[in-house]
Amino acid sequence: MFRNYEKVDAIGAEVSLQAKWENGLQGKLSYTWQDASIVGTGARLTNSPRNMAKANISVPVFSTNTFLSPELQYTSPRLTLAGNRTKDVVLANLTLFSRDLIKGLETSASIYNLFNTSYSDPVGAEFVQDTIRQDGIDFRFKLTYRF
Image 1 (cartoon, rainbow, N blue to C red):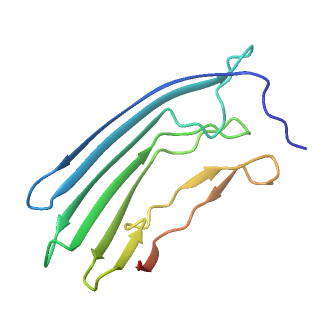
Image 2 (tube, one colour):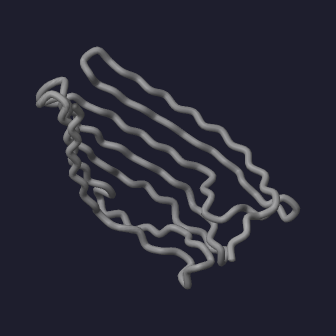
């Protein structure tokens, strides 16, 4: 059986900056802060990071239709159901993306967790483990055709 907490206090803020230049270069920075706790006990919520940040840039390559986009993501430690804390994690991703090389066709090739960072995420009560190790380096290829 699963039950939500009756009341939770949550406060947070998010800020992001985005820039686009005439040569096709684009960038974005974002930061999120949050504090979430159970009303009455003041206990922090599990799997609720206080800090998250993301930075990415898209650089045109070959033409204005093809971009190379590196990205960094940061997540601060999170509380587990057993009262432990995960380690903070920084992940790097890389995507090569093209659009309209052929009218209506978008393609992308992405590498996630580029440096094969070892990290774990907190899990719910239905698991025996306190955390589950997440995938290492991962690849994705995508084709989209719009007509």
